[in-house]
Length: 86
Image 1 (cartoon, rainbow, N blue to C red):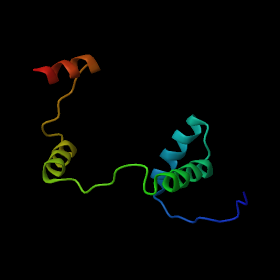
Image 2: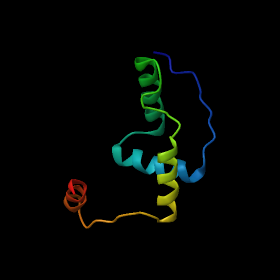
Image 3: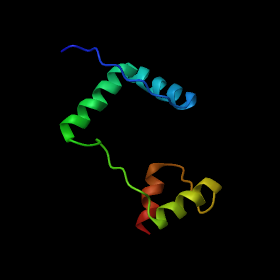
Image 4: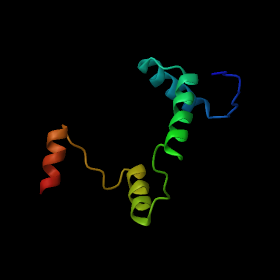
């Protein structure tokens, strides 16, 4: 397959750096990641993940967590899951 189409995109430098660090750990180049993303779009006939506008409860919860309000910390996953049972 001829790979001659070019994509230009602008992205925040910090986002780019963080993402490329993760891709490097995975052994995937940015170009390969974009190629995989586009392939998944064509296979699924849409984005390969859900994109939704958060509802009021989600927006409120995210705002509180950003402020450190109503945040519960646990020493381990086991204690976190155990707290959900109560």
